[in-house]
Length: 102
Image (cartoon, rainbow, N blue to C red; front, side):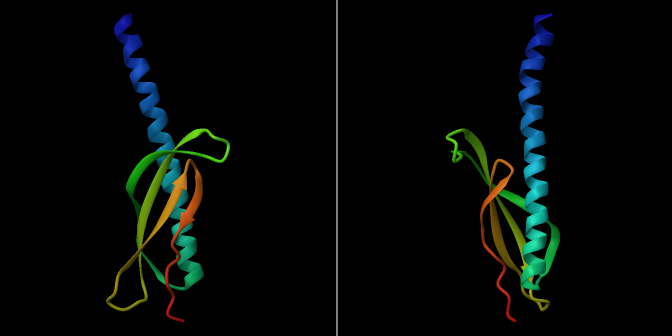
């Protein structure tokens, strides 16, 4: 009985962290695609990669996961540039726009 309780006490927070991470990643993926469309550049690899994870307080003073995602884009030649999106919880709080040559 106590073993099952310990497993639940460990598994439940891990499952919550995993689902919130996936939701933030999906939101960052959508935002990076939209930023590339707006800048008229090619979004490469159709994905984002988490490069940093920390804890930060939101505007209400509550602790939330702060995740920084990197994505890559190109101007259509043999070039490759990267930009970032910073998420606090499920909300994008900062990003670097892709640079357009047009």
